[in-house]
Structure formats: structure tokens, C-alpha cells
Image (cartoon, rainbow, N blue to C red; front, side, top):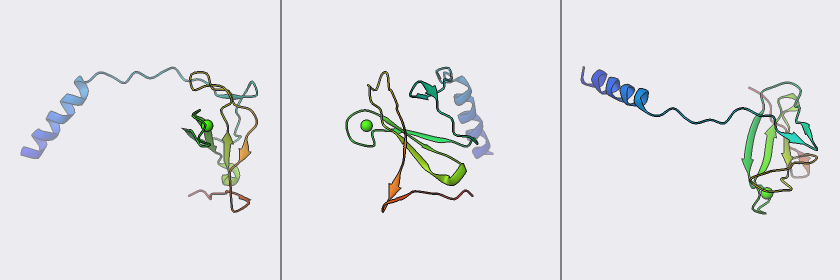
Length: 99
Ligand SMILES: [Ca+2]
């Protein structure tokens, strides 16, 4: 009973908390066109991969399980992405199987 009341208390707090303030969804572009991955299931990661202080974009694509790397060529407030390269390890494209 005590754990049930405690859970109810925690649930009440979460209901009363301010809702998250999300931005409206938008499409990310490279070379001025929306990035298309074919089949869905993209897993984007925004991180400064090359260490230049600008946040880059890494996107996993379901088909072939490859990882695309888009280098940010502008700023963190207004990122600009050009052509992607497939991320590699030991000279070969990284490929991750699904499942
Ligand atoms: Ca970077």
C-alpha cells in the first residue's frame, strides 16, 4: 500500500509539472534539399564529430545499415550540411545489421 501511494504521489507530480516545450518538427536539408533516407527508421545524432566546434549530423539508415556523416559547414545556430560520406572503420563502410 505504501509503494502504491508513493507511486500515485510521483504520478501526481509528473501531471502537475510543466509540459515540455518542443519545437515544431522540421526537415533537415543538405545541399538545399531535404535529406531522404528511403526507408524510415533513421536515428539521427547531433554531435561535433570532427572537433571543429560545430555540431555535425550523423544519421543511421535502415537500408544497408550504413551511417551517414554530414559535416556542418556553417554554425551551430544555422547549420548547413552538404554531401554526406559513409562513416568507416578500418577502411570499410560501417554497416550495422538490424534486429
Ligand atoms: Ca563539427
